[in-house]
Image: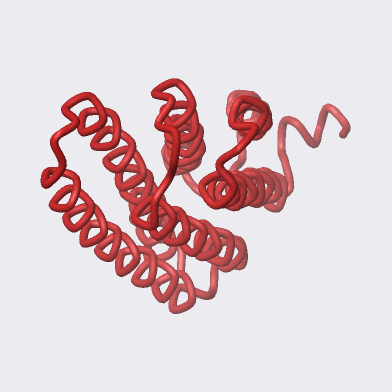
Length: 209
């Protein structure tokens, strides 16, 4: 990339990076689900998850570095910064969920965790689709559909959390209750972070359509 490209980037440069980050996040979501389904060799699975988180950090750094050197951007600099930060929060939350499962040594996973992970996968798919539509700047309806679906999935995650906690509190192992409650809530918080991304993408689509 030439010096001029860094100063006045083509519109697609930022969205290339956003799409790259979204793809990494979706891979991390798939890995989280696989980790829950096949809960063995957890240490190495967490190590791989950390590699996804690191990849995302590298891309985020590229976005901020490019933003600091750009006089012309496809959307407002504040919008780029907010979107990058919110996408990074999703990946961090996925990594946090995997680390808690490992460090808490929970032993076994359950269907509530798996349901939550599958909802996160669906949300990250919608984020990828919404970012691709946002790049075009003329497809607000597609972005809106994705955002509505992400919000719907977040509501389902709320329901999963409520039922999982209700069942958990019927047990008597206080230590396990504390551990599992934190894991369940971290998974649900990940869906909240996806919803944050959707809200930002929705605002961008409306403003620039």
